[in-house]
Length: 575
Image: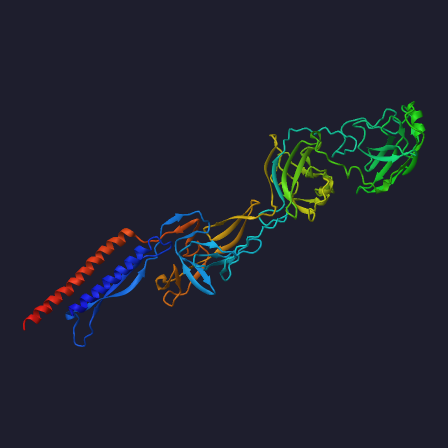
């Protein structure tokens, strides 16, 4: 029986050395889990023998037990190298078959799937177009490398939409002094000047003497070009404008009601145009079509600069809107107190510069806000009161904003492009919220504490990042990021019941129990770390010591066989 006992000992030691050698061979294998040999003694069955007198007949291997302890984490340069810190396995798929692994060395194949070196595909939850991840049945993760579509300002998904700002307007500021000039309308009331009255002989089209002007070119009967200018002067009655006219910028005025020439020094004659509250034309005393005798201009000026002839003047005033409602806001420093700007995006992803101008009014605690886009006039921007008109911010005596927020802003970006001489398309008009909640009017310097918006241009995928929760985020060239997918992990009640398939893969068995699948960092599942791998948990020092031990065991068992052989030889020699 000693031969059998010694032989079983040799077999046990050989198998133990096999396990140790396998551990040592895989000490550099990512995600490898070391194994231990478990042995049991063997007794011969006897119907009459008693337990106290039974002698064993050797040893046998009971099992090879995997040690699913944590391996060391080592960083790498590949963002798709992913380590598990804690419990769980990556869930892999190939042709419908599911396996599990701790080896997180992944990369993308040509179809955008995340695969390992064996071309098995990593599984998880796929995100929708908006980056929303809804846990469902895990699928093979496929990353979309297409350009990220643009989001127009006001169409974003997040804590806020549109434009949000927080500013302080200096309460010590004075109402700006505004000037008027030809072709220029400026928001707010006119600066202090002596408004001309009908019959005022001193009036001339000089700066600060009119609200708005228009100039038209005409040809005389001899073909020479001339210009006729109309000057609109705001009266004390809302919507009513006195209108003066002259030709070629001379000192000789015209009677806009009939086209007659008025010599310098004679009382100026004005017509009137009336608009309703909406800025629409109502009526006028102007002659929309008259002829100017150029000889009369020569006579009035006492010169002989004009050839004989006439200028036929035609102007359809009924198509005009009120100069106040269509005033061209020019951001001249004399017309506002402060300004601040940010980039916004149209529906095609093109960037535009939106500038806000803050103008202190004569009313205590009140500021007008104007806006322009890409340096154009404010005619294409509607802050809720019609294009070109301001919104109002009202602060109480403590400097706290009282105006209800947010306000709605509408921008005709195609009109902006046309005004800038571009024929490009800006997509659909923008409409978004403008929120200045939290802004103040304190006696301190102006400051833009926050100014942000939710739009962005299109972007190309430039990188990937994996969070501890398994969420894979794509980073884009437009500075944005978007959730693309979420990796899932699986765990088992008895991981040692898994079937080792080789290639760092295990499969589920009846002994292991069913897989519990979920997101990383939940339940018993560990957290993930990107650009890192989990090293083998083999302790080389311990394995080398165990190897020496098993070598001695093997030698000892061989010696027991040798001893038994010597005894048997002695018995044989008794003959």
